[in-house]
Structures are given as structure tokens and as C-alpha cells.
Length: 267
Ligand SMILES: NC(=O)c1ccc[n+]([C@@H]2O[C@H](COP(=O)([O-])OP(=O)(O)OC[C@H]3O[C@@H](n4cnc5c(N)ncnc54)[C@H](O)[C@@H]3O)[C@@H](O)[C@H]2O)c1
Image 1 (cartoon, helix red, strand yellow):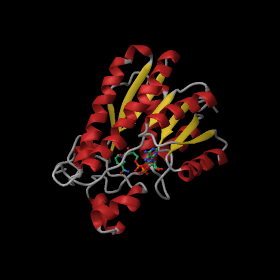
Image 2 (cartoon, rainbow, N blue to C red):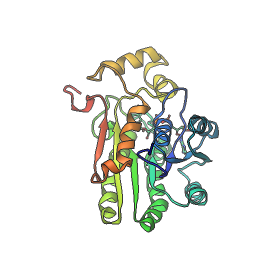
Image 3 (cartoon, rainbow, N blue to C red):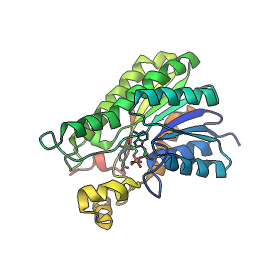
Image 4 (cartoon, helix red, strand yellow):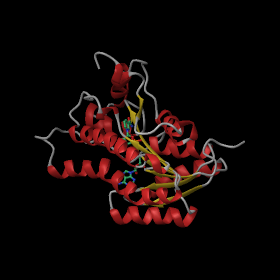
């Protein structure tokens, strides 16, 4: 059977997961591979990327891993070069890396603020800077950027730098989409809401609930109209649609994956 992404080459950044379960990047790498895509899985943590690769290759798919800190220009240049050496083209760029640190302007130190800008936003600029000329030469390409509903709504917690970067990703994506619309390149963003990904256990429970995972999961579920939280597989399916030809007329827009929360009142 021919997959929906048959033989397309996809770079996934943050293709591992910070713990057991389905992080967004890991789930997207596996889902794309199930549809025939060749995966260039890049992560700062080689073990995390290797785990994703094993899932893909055990199922008969193709995956190459590459270790990079994508906040660093030299690492981004090297990873794009390594993908071209390996596969000779880049059809899909899925910019997945990101994460939040708590705080508002008065209590967030400058280095944490700058770290949030680099971790959530600058790497998307860097990846696009080095991948767009390749896609332009190919006359074809798809870019998907991971934003968040925190970019359009107050999350209930002062994670101001995260909110600002995730809002910026939406408009960055629209701007790139229009600039490259006649060049065969589409660019969209995905806005996940409260997802039960491994970062809930790895980071968020510590930041928000004194390490009480059951409490934070219950609180988050109660805030979602559907009453439960999706996981990385739900964002992966949205990404698959945007990456596929089924979305050929869809660019400069966003898909919200949040069980209805951003439309609910009170939020
Ligand atoms: N999980 C959620 O509830 C949620 C909600 C909304 C948006 N998002 C967004 O989804 C994306 C993925 O989130 P997640 O929670 O699945 O990710 P995660 O925290 O599980 O991290 C995924 C991978 O990114 C890697 N990584 C971290 N920094 C890196 C760097 N500098 N260079 C290369 N790799 C790096 C990690 O090693 C990890 O394997 C983020 O952009 C996040 O903001 C997540």
C-alpha cells in the first residue's frame, strides 16, 4: 500500500521524548514513518532519538538520527547538511522543539527570558533559514511549526515568555507561507492545548503541583470540555494531514488540537 507521505523526507526536531509515552515529536516521527516517510530524527538527546528510531525501524520504516542542539546555528547548518547527504532532499520540516518556563516579566530573570526565545522561536527561524532555499530549489516543501493555545489564550499560569514566543510562531508561519506561496511551499502551525505528553510528569507537575502528577492530570482534564487530554498522537495526526497532499490548498493557517478548550467559556 502507498502511504500518504510515501518516500518523502521529513526532518523532525525534538524527535525524542522526555519520558515514556508519546511526546509530540516522537509521535509525529512514528506516524509519518507509518505513512511511508523517511525520517531524519534530530534531538539534543541521542538516547531519546534512538528510541524513536527503534520504533520506526522495528516496524520496517526508515529513520536516521542526528544529535543537535537546534538553538545553535552551527548545529542547524550541520543537521541540514547531514540530511541532504543522507537523502538528497527535504520535503517536510516539522519544527517541534519547545517548552515553557514559569514567570512574568518582573520575576523572570533575563537569561530565562532569552532562553525561552531561543528554545521556542529562534530555532524555527534558523531551521527555516537553512531549509527554505533547498525547498525553493525543489519547487516543493511543507513546513509545520509547533505553536500552542498559549499563543492565543492566557493559560491560567504566568508563563509569559512561552505565550509570547508561541504567539510569534503563528505570525512567523503565516508570513513565511505568504512569502513562499507561489514557490510550492506551504507553511502552517499547530496549536496543541493541554496534552498528556511525558513533559507533564517530567516538568509540569514539579512547576505547578509540587510534583503531584495525579493532581495536575485531574486538574487539566477538568479544564478540557471533552474531559480528557489528548497526547502526542493527536498532534501527530494533525501534522500528518498538514504534511500530506490532502492539505495542498491549506497554507498560512493553524490547526487547534485542544478538545475544545480554547473555544469554551469560561476558558
Ligand atoms: N505537551 C503539551 O502539552 C504541549 C502543549 C502545547 C504545545 N506543545 C508544544 O509541542 C512541542 C513538543 O512538546 P513536547 O512536550 O512533546 O516535547 P518534549 O519536552 O517531550 O521534548 C521533545 C524532545 O525535544 C528535545 N529537545 C529539547 N531541547 C532541544 C534542543 N535545543 N535541540 C534539539 N532537541 C531538543 C528533547 O530532548 C526531547 O526529546 C513544543 O514546541 C511544545 O511547546 C506541547
